[in-house]
Length: 197
Image (cartoon, rainbow, N blue to C red; front, side):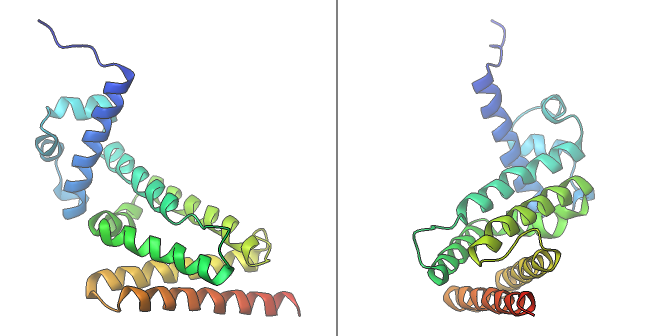
């Protein structure tokens, strides 16, 4: 009996299986050191199936980060019912907890993944979307170049701080959240002061 044809549901499930295996392998190795055979072995499939779904190793690598970006974005969605300061703390706590649950994936995304133009474009788009969400909550115009620069600078600080936190295991998560929230308050105050001049 021949193999059953892949339905859309089965194809989606298989694609997710391949992406999980690829993330596992790419998260622990440099891109140039990974072969498609290693990914196919981790997924328990033939390497031809990887090419069938993704075309090239680079396309597989780029596709691997898409679920990471979406998960991070979904987990940090602000609860608009909370007061502003609590909203930031809860959002940053969710971000830190997501990173702590997926440290390899986060490191992969922020250190190796952005080496590709396509991945960098996805990360940049996610950051600009964050500016569009954060600025209005601070009473600022996300289209203002100074506001955009200030919030993007804060986001770069968040990335650097969380990577350092992952490596060192310190500070405690509550202290990390306060540090990040305080930096956002400082950024907002500086931007508001500049706007009022």
